[in-house]
Structures are given as C-alpha cells and as structure tokens.
Length: 510
Image (tube, rainbow, N blue to C red):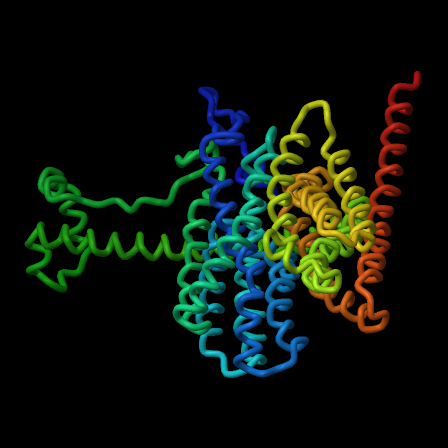
C-alpha cells in the first residue's frame, strides 16, 4: 500500500550531492505530537463523551414523543453504532483527503446532525438526523483522531493513546452535566441546538491535525517546476531595436494606439500572462486532485479486496472476531447496573456514589496506567492487552454473584480498570498490520465494535425477557467474550511457533 511521508513520520532531504536521505521527523514523540494528543482528547470528549450522556436526552424524547422505550432507544444505539460501523468507509476519506480535512468535514456534519435534530417532529425523524447524520459525522472525526496519535508517536504510543482516550471518561461527566443543565434551562430542542454549536469545535481539533511534513517545499533532481512565460518590460523593448523590428513585422497592427504605447503593451502582456498562469494552476490542481482520489481509492480497495488484503492476515482476522464480542461486555454493565441496584435494594447507597461512576473513574485511570506499563521496554504490549482482557472476563462472570454494595463496587472497579485496554487497541492493530495500513485496519476493528455495541444491549435485553434474570445476560456475554479471546490466543500461539521455526531454519547450518 502507498506510504507517504505523513504516514511514517520521516522527511526526505537533499544532501549536497542531490541524494535523498532519511531523517527522523523532529515532531515524533515530542513537539507538535502533544498538541495532537490534546486534539484527540477533545475529540473523545465531544464525541464519545456526548454519546455516553445520551441517556439525558433519551428521557426527554420519551416524554415528548410518547413512544416505546425500545423504539426510542434505537436513536442512541444508531448514533453510537454508526459512529463505529462507518470506520472502513472513513479509511477511504483518510487515504484521499488526509486526516485533517476528514476530521473538519466530520465536525461540520456532526454539528449539522445535532442542529437538525432540534426540529424533530417524531422519533423516526431522529433516526435520520441524529442516528445517521450525527453518527456519520462522529465517525469521520473519531478515526482520524486515533490514527494521528499513532503517526506522531513511536516510543510512547501506548501512553499517548491512553491519555487521549481518557477524554471519553471526562466527557461522560462533563457532557452529562451540560446536557442536564441545558435541558432544564432551555428545553431539549434548544439544548441540541447549542450542543450542535459546541460540536463545531471538532473542526478546530481537526485543523490541529497537521500532517508530518517538513513545512518547506523541495524540488528533487529530475523534477521541473511549472513553466514560466517570458515577459518583456518597457526598458527591454527600448534597448533592443532588433526585437522591436521583428515584433513589428510579425504582428498585424490591429490597434495602432496599443503598439505605440509601450506601457499599455506591458499591462496587456501581464494580464495575458496572469490568465495563462491561472489556467495552468487550475488545470494542475484538478489533475493532482484526480490523481489523489484515484490513488486513495486504489489503496483503500487493495487493502480490503486486493492481493495485499488485510483479510489474508489470519492474526488480524482473529482480532476482528475478538472485537465483535468485546465492546458489548463493556456497555452491558452500564445498562443493567441501575436495574440490578433496584433489585438488591441498594438504591440509597448507589445514590451516594453510583456504581457506573466507579466504572468511569477507574476506566480513565486504567487507560493511563496500562499505557505506561505497556510502554516499558521489558513488557510486551500483547501481554498487557491479554491480561486486561482476562481480568475483564472474570469480572463479568463474578459481577452477578455479588449482592452487596461493597462487593459490586469492587467488581465494578475491576471492570473499569481492566477495560482501560481500549487505549491499547490502536497499538496492537499497528503491531499486526503496520502504520501504513492502520487507518483501514482500525476502521475494520471499530466497525466490529460498532456492531457489538448496536446488537449487544438488545441481545442482553432479549435474554432477560426469556429468563427474567439479569444474571444470564452477563454469563452469555462472558462466554462470547471468552470465544473472542480464544481466537486471539490460538492465532498468537501459531504465530509464535511459526517465528520460532523460522529462526531455527535460518540458524541451521547449510
């Protein structure tokens, strides 16, 4: 697949012998890289934080439209699901337009979805404006925020991703408070209109995602600049009599006044030169844009369906199966915990300090701590990733067995901390496919997470309708999660055996 300087973070500079040398970019792991982390942090606040706070608006929609809970809940589910499901298609935009413009356009589309939703006449109208439009805009801004952090960091990728994704937890607190205040003071319609204006800050975040370039233009050997048309000044016409004679013989004196006036002739030549140069620049821009779109689509198509398809990587395919079952195990506790608290008569203690808040706070801490640990030179990212997954599975199985607030609080803390491995997902994906394929590959992974988020909660509700217990929802999701982890472990063992065999063959005497 095509690899640009922006992708790998290196600049090509001309040495005195006109040879291109590879020089590490000064912003890698420092400088502007931390501005990218800050930009990604605010993207997570504005997108993921807002989606975690949609329960506030869901209550308002139920009171306004008097529809069933299941039908109204699809508005939030569509928005969250489409944000992640459109990941593979957003990879096409990134390959064609770059991360900066993709994020800026996504911010505009997301804000437009919020504003149009303020004029909703029914729930089905919200399916289009908020579920589809705002969700698609969120996806366009979210994927570039993740990809750009990986491009700007090499040594501290896990820590950088952990810091940027903590915006989800902070956003869940901030956006919940903001939406509650706006709904009380101005009503839910004006609240959505104001939130649309706030979402325009995604364009600012996108503008900060500048590509990894040197900032100055270079012309390599063999390249030629645009042709410059010659111009003649008044002094040159006067000083060169032979040139003047040739022009007088070759030109037809249609306008004697123009020929006799050197100043007017010079102005007319400059205007003609400017028009020719402008037309040339427009033609060159259109040609470059066409080549860029064609190249971006070719890279996107070959990454999914060509000979270098990502699906030929068996380890990556196993990672996709894992992603299908992982996200629902994190979402379901947020949905069922309030009901479990009511069943066990723990509402008073939960009102003092909600269990969902414990998950959110430890989730933020887990992202930072796991990122720091994964960046240690003596520890493998895969080891941290798998250990966190196993801890989360055990916590999901144990959670239904706890009937006291203290027991539930401890298990929720484990769920929140271990789920911090989500910050390691871009790092693990890059380890599997390389930085040049990260946009397409991570788009597939978040698409699988989106399907899980879209179908997981209804599936858990369906199990409750059959069994009349929340326990089985956790058990079934835990079993599915274990299947995903087994896919990873099997393929990881095959990979380790293959690498050991290759080393043995390479080291054997001929």
